[in-house]
Length: 335
Ligand code: ZN
Image 1 (cartoon, rainbow, N blue to C red):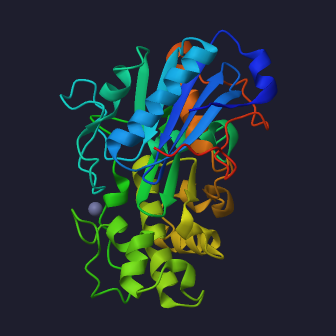
Image 2: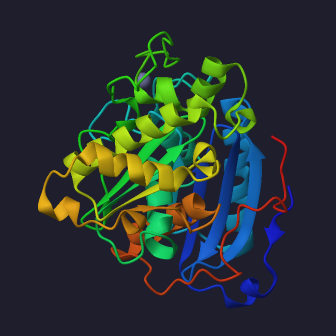
Image 3: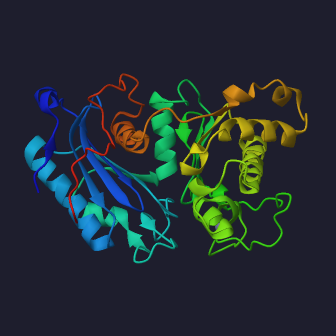
């Protein structure tokens, strides 16, 4: 495997070397960066079998260490569910994922076998929230929610300036909400709960419900009103539980026309005038579009690696052209 090198960044490699992985259901993005967040090498690995995908990822970091020196910390932002409690016997594992062949895969143990450095593991959505915190719609905010509505529904939380986890990570995408008006027959597709919000309102749920993917539903189709109702219901729940400064809504479903404005209006209605501090919220500001770009998750993972070592966020990083990217031009290594 030949590393994809990032030109001038090679000349300015500092004493700190960071590894980051955005581990997704369709691709793994891996990067090595210096202490300024400048990417030195990146690779995109299609997610196939766990053995092949993880093997290619660890080979990338092994070669990067030969090229650039010892990596100081590695952070992984992964699809889940994950076991994140350090005292749990399965800590570091992907646990009950419906993704075939990836149940009970121990991510941390795999990478520790070849990379003896401090490691952190968090959810893909928490890492994306960190990316938004540094460079996007979460800038300057200590407490906000990052929600992605796509192949699943995931919620990342920054609370008090840190990614939130307790006994394990929250699973707000599996909350059950009151049925939207007119939604009476559809059983939902969540293999665990049926009609939780992911089971009713994720992209695959839309496809199962209407027989076509969401992108092909006309903008005036009643399916969109249901979708807006469920997403606004999730936002109302997050508002009452977390009381964030902002809720950032991303993912493929939110790319449909006018979705953010429709959710803002529906959320205002659902909150029903409760609490003066909520009545005065500017919904345009409160419900936001993600702006940190497609590489927010990978950037967030690298920032978590930095924080593991330096005990603070890399406030000096800038979202420049030299930062990590998740662009289509990224070299693909076929596992
Ligand atoms: Zn569920």
